[in-house]
Image 1 (cartoon, rainbow, N blue to C red):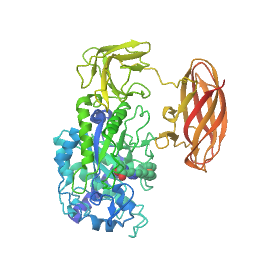
Image 2 (tube, rainbow, N blue to C red):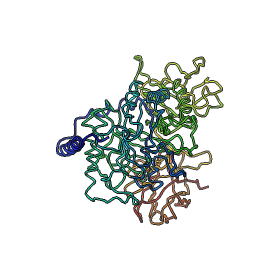
Image 3 (tube, helix red, strand yellow):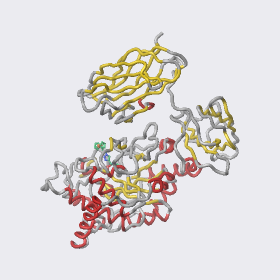
Image 4 (cartoon, helix red, strand yellow):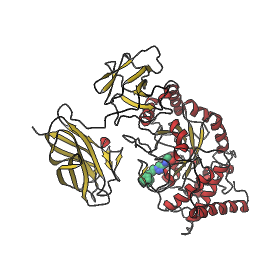
Length: 604
Ligand code: H79
């Protein structure tokens, strides 16, 4: 609710003065990054909540179903923003909203933080905003949801965090406008919009106590740039020096994979959306946000729920790669979280109660790649004088042999082995060559979704680096997921390919280990738009020297998903360690190719 013109103008002036002063002064004093990130890295698991005007219609407009995600209703049904406001503001009355219950559901699921949409792309504020009448106080509900939720979340010992959309389909000063929005446009208005957004952020960061994360989104339109990102980041951190800000505060995120390549860009962590990086992002903080079905905001017609098992395993997978999992719920218009979500979170919570120590406060697996039987997380630092590290083995596929191998680790097992939730089991760990083998784990999984085995090892994990080795038939598979990439190249989930291949300097390589020198015929599986492709250079490297160069022309294809497998020549690989490295030697368009795999077949 807008209070008085004077108050609102003062807030805008204050925000713009701050923006101006931070441009000339040094950035505000913030706590060191590792200190700020500590609670977040320990938590590993949080709840995302998408709640807003769109929750009541739940993916319908004029009584008809609308395609796409629920919270994009205005866009998907091409609704005039004022018509949207007029229709939905009087409908917003979540009478069953119980902040305490939402907070308990998150807490019982083993989550450490809650991120709620203070304002999504539709521009509607869920709190009592002094600079806008398009807020919860204009609805029949008239309760400050941010106030109630932040109190309740803190009472459960969790961190309250704000999602805030930069893109705003409703505010008259935001640009670009949707094409069906016929209101007059003032080309100079965007800085005024930023002042407004800053005034709203100031409210959110001064009235509700300590906020854990400012989770920006909607930063990808051309009006948002690094300068705005810097000013906004400075404002947020000046108001809350301990806050964590995601990378969407700045421009330059590369696709849904969520990482920013530019090291000068603002933001504390990468935000893969609906995707999990195949091997994590060593040295970077990141958080996968994901829906339980196919929508963020409530959509009555969406029944495509992931199973609790799928989500438990995703949590293990993400933790094993050193990331966080931000799992979404979309409460209904009445303020209740859908029963399908509650039931799944209950089951995840049961699992966390037994196995939470294998998630909370853990770090990534020391092993460079996943194991076929499951995942590994690590707990440091060293406890009880003996310099031991705990490895948690998250077993998805229970081994018929009754033993589990950790290949390629030189530490000695130390102390006992525990099966979480099954104290009567007495497994033991011993060394076998370059592996630690855990025996006596029992013939059946304790938990069919994921059983965790805790193994102590002496010292800091010392593991062998990743190598691609030939399969039993002598073939070598260099897959996108296993590639070591540099520059702009990123793994993409959609086609399990390497994409974002933007320049001639970027490379993908695979470290290889062969028992003997051998000759191979190679093929590449790739796709490219009709504009693109070009010449691929293929090098066989050893000890940093190129042994064997290759260059092959890749023809354009019909699209980025139109894959074909073509031969790329004959290569000799030396015995021992070598490397296959590919680059674009020339490219026809902005991007080169989508590379899915290179296969090497031994020549008889
Ligand atoms: O709030 C939820 C969604 O409504 C919102 N983010 C989550 C957390 C969302 N916004 N957009 N999308 C999801 C999908 C949009 C993808 C694209 Fe793009 C925007 C494709 C092109 C512009 C991101 C930026 C991917 C490439 C550039």
